[in-house]
Amino acid sequence: MKVAPSFNTYRSMDAACSTPQLVLLLCDGAIRYTREAAEHMHANRWSEKGTAIESALECIGELRKCLNLSENSEFVAQINQTYSFLATKLSIGNASRDISQLHQVADALTNIRAAWSELFDRLRQEGKLPSGEFAPMVPATHGTTVANHSAITR
Image (cartoon, rainbow, N blue to C red; front, side, top):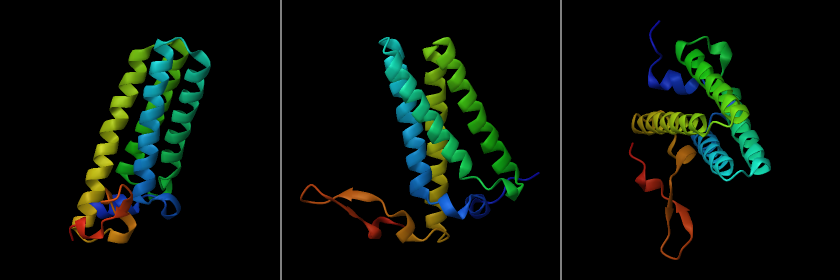
């Protein structure tokens, strides 16, 4: 089975939670909490580690919920299996107190986030993702942030 073109890949995500910002924020959260869990594990802060693991698992779970499983595409099935695998690996690393497992999950999530970001950039360039839906935040001259709509290539 051929992987869907970029627009179909994006459209395969559920409309209710498929904004690029949400997907990237969930990836960022999962990465952050996984790394925090590894730091807490290293420092023997078991309660904090447990909280961070739980938060990372919640982010991964939300990423899975964003997938439209009724789409029946190879991409959706593969990314769903990948998210499931990472959640399992995170749980195993937690239970066995294996920091290397947590680092592997964080690295994989970082790669997945980069792939999503690249896909969203390509969709913007192809004009298939509205610029208002994914306006990058850039520093303003007075320390605040503003959406830079002109930075989006069409």
